[in-house]
Image (cartoon, rainbow, N blue to C red):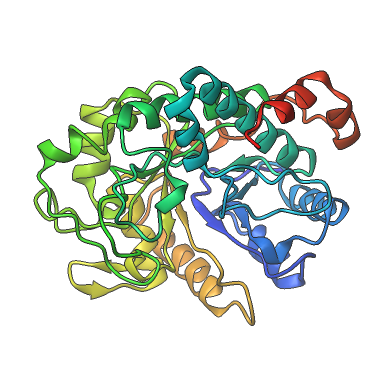
Length: 355
């Protein structure tokens, strides 16, 4: 099967099995992956079958999920472990730092090994946002207020992911935790200076730049740096993240269907133009979520618009971006569920999770 030369779009599917429209969209040459949600889950056997069907369409498709632990965990039944929130690990740090790092590594290993056992390649974790006590959308998804604690515990989670053969994604660069507004339904604005942000919220990204496989920028505007949200800002993505901090992994846009996901320079863009703007700013992958439900017209609008933009020369394939996408695919075989449950490493990790 001929593989796509560059596939920067991440989309979703409507349900627990593939419809004809889902198959058609996943076969689109610019689609590089799929993101699952709770609606796509019934049980382990169903999820494994769904993912096998996706891989049969194109083996290089990256199967993703937002599965962090705590309140952001898409699969919770049929044997999946209820993972602790990241704040739980941060609280444990205050009593026993080394026990907290051990628990963080265990959480990453359990998270990744269970997902991989049902055919999921990649999770958007860990959260590197700091807990300033203001953000409604971050809250207990954050490890800690102290960037040093957040970075060390995140590194533990990333180590656990790696042990199970899964890459990682630090989010939301350069930090979403300082602003109160939820970017799903509003456009957050962080009015701090670049110096203040780099000295605080962006520090985990700086310290982990050589370990992070991927980064997801925040749908937040930092007007003292750029009038555009970070995910659409070449200043943030190319000048600061890649240039100043030296990050060379994959950059995902956050969900382009979010309220803050298509407002650029004071106007609302189409999904196609938002995806093009994100890629032009420095993202390698542009993600549109929860638009396959119903007739999926927004997804078809994106795919048709993207094909037209490519034909018109508004978008050029990027070999480096495609290489970064492919680098996120697992490089070692997954351990089957029954073998995983029988393994000493998995039982030890389960025992190391905080009660």
